[in-house]
Structures are given as structure tokens and as C-alpha cells.
Amino acid sequence: MSKRKLPRGGGTQVALSPELAIAAIGLFALYSDGESGDVETESLGELLSAIDLYEDYAEEDFAALGSEIGTLINEEGIEAVVVQALATARDEGIEEAAFAVAVIVIAADGEVPEEEQEFIDSLHQALGISANRAIAIIDELFSSEEEGEEEEDEEE
Picture 1 (cartoon, rainbow, N blue to C red):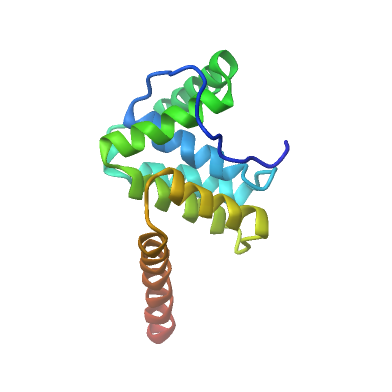
Picture 2 (cartoon, rainbow, N blue to C red):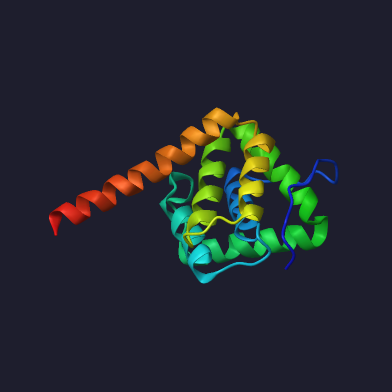
């Protein structure tokens, strides 16, 4: 699969629930460098299951969610789905959650090559998140992780 760029807008408007929007943005992030790895794929599943929005989802619900996104992409096209996912995230006030999911998925394999950094940069802009806020979100995500690792090291 070729690397993905965020669409500039236009296309058919498809209705997406907040659950579909975050999952679609996470999936789009998964392929931002043109491929998906097992670690990134696992990370997306774990992240979604930890978000309150998905608290009532069972494994088969996540599978249905993935199928629904795939069907929408096949019927409407990737650009229309991504444009609507971004719009839904902004309209529903979940843009920071969607951004955080994308960043964590991208960083899950421990590498953030240039293509993925470009995706992160364009994603925060498309979601209407300032560069300063995007940096703060990234810092919050990874400083908590580093603190947790330091605490684990101290316990050993």
C-alpha cells in the first residue's frame, strides 16, 4: 500500500459516528508510511478498547467496525471517508483523542520516519489543533509513558 497523505477536502460526505471517525483516523495513521506492522495494528486495537467511547464494544463489535470502515472506503473512497472522519472529530470535540490515537499508533513500533512525521504534522492541522497544542499532547503521551517505565525500573 502506498503512503497516505491527508486529503485536502471535497468528495462525497458520508456520515460517520464518533466511534467510526476515531477508528478511521487510527487506521489511516496505521498506513501513513505505506505499510502496517503487527505492533502498530495491535496498538490500534488496544487503544480503541481503552477509550470510553468503546467501553461497550466486544471483539466482534471491533471486527464489525473495521468491516464498516472498509465498506465505506470501497463505496465512497478513502478521501471521502477521511475528510468526514476529520470533520466528525472536529464537530464532536474529539479531535485531540483522534490525534492521540494516531500518534500512539504511529510511534508503537518505536520509529517515526519522515513520512509519519509529515502525517502527524498534517493531521494536527487538519483537526484544527495548533502546533503548540500538538506538541503538548505528544509530550503528555510520552512523558507519562517514560515516567511509568522509570517507576517500573525503580521497583525492580
